[in-house]
Length: 242
Image 1: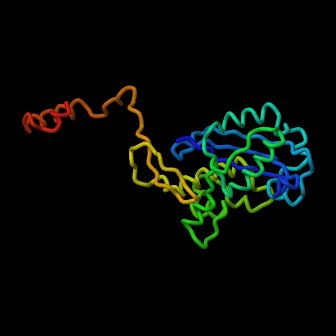
Image 2 (image 1 turned 135 degrees about the vertical axis):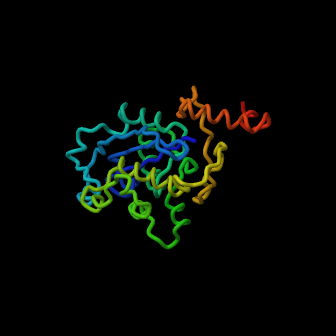
């Protein structure tokens, strides 16, 4: 199943008051695992960026002044193509959905319905009631520093960024859904999260290799095995497989 984990950075907290997106990043996951495919753009918000917001993501008005606007051909078209019809995964998804829809509304484009979004925040709250469930808190809980993420740097000015946050959230999302060490069920995944509660997860059966792997046993080992099977008689399991 293909899903898009994404994040935005903005000029503030309220698109209805004129705040705009300044950065957007998407990470493709298939069956919960990142594929390596990403979409990332810095956006000229066509307005000032308050200093208190710059301290969070480090994106100044001067830096963004020569970046494309959201409606530019190399932003909106590739973004819509990358997202496709996949479910959209975000932490506190309503925040990002409101900003995305505000930008789409300015372009007279179709709005994204709430049913398209999977919010990892209520999933985390259901798993860890009463605990801190920010992206940073979840990243510490799941020890993303062991995967190479610099969690300490995020405490400093400009420590947040849409692409970094989307990549971190992709790992957190995998863990919230059961992690890399869960039992495998080789059937097509059909269950989806509903009302913020994690649904059962299953893996799609991997396709057969186009050609078998070369055997690693030696000729002597193969001969010894054949002799052993011969001693078991015609009803030996290995004869049935052959």
